[in-house]
Image 1: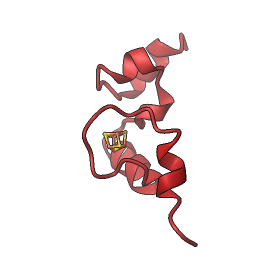
Image 2: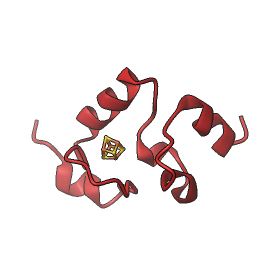
Image 3: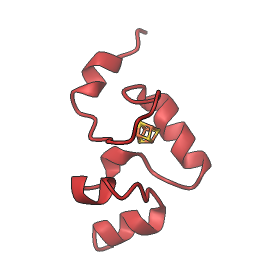
Image 4: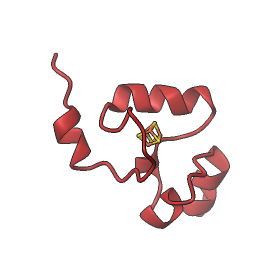
Length: 63
Ligand code: SF4
């Protein structure tokens, strides 16, 4: 299976300079290992804070 990086980049809202951008499997593995979620789990306004914690996710979505 080929990597869908180019397609994924069309939907990526991450504003952090990062070599995992568009490589979603690496991106989510990286963040989950740190008990975080990727940029695309957050509204754009919250994404820009770079706080990708579960707590920030719950707060962003009023959970
Ligand atoms: S969400 Fe995190 S790992 Fe994914 S591209 Fe952005 S900074 Fe990199």
